[in-house]
Image (tube, rainbow, N blue to C red; front, side, top):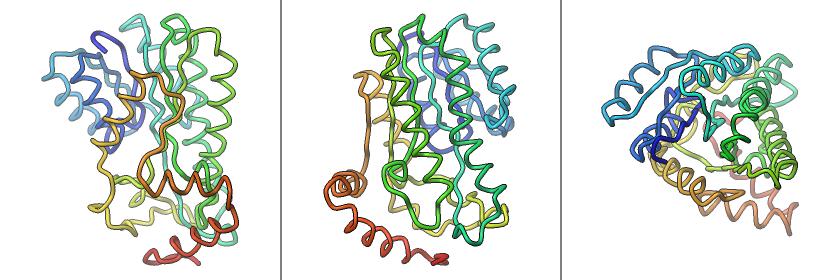
Length: 267
């Protein structure tokens, strides 16, 4: 990772912030991207102490021009891209019958289109460096989660996009990683959108009992170094993916029962 150039979207908190730190600890130069510039500068200050170069770019990945600007600023500053971590994402929690369609569009714009835009504009540089592109997805990209139709849809779409991209470029040296952390302690649930588009506020889960972002970052960085195709984390996550291949109806019932026990569950 020494002197490699890594772009991390959604870098102001959670998995994105932890990944940026881990890459910097290994000697990589970092481009931090997110909407919250104030938080990004705090992360940049923290990372700069490790002796690497850091660039902060304010970007809303749901906007095509912001993603183009992110890549343009990166190339004008560093002249290369070795790793792109598409981590920016939002969640939602509401029954389809109760949700505004604009909420579903917003989730898809950030989670799916944000990854598409950034990857599209960075692809020539990544092909030149024979680098890595990462889609930080979810177990919800393997199994639909009730009350999270928009979120699951966006992650299923990410899987199809990155899998097709990998096959397209399998003879060009491009590494594509689909990373599925499972439930991780972060602010994604507290900032999840309700049916009317407002933030749901307090997280419905005990964040302290979940895998921490720093641990997830360690796994992601290691998977990139080993150029793995897929990364699925947590015992429950791996078990869900495995059982769903052979007993999908059983897993439907198990997922329903599990998710229905959340505080304030919509079903």
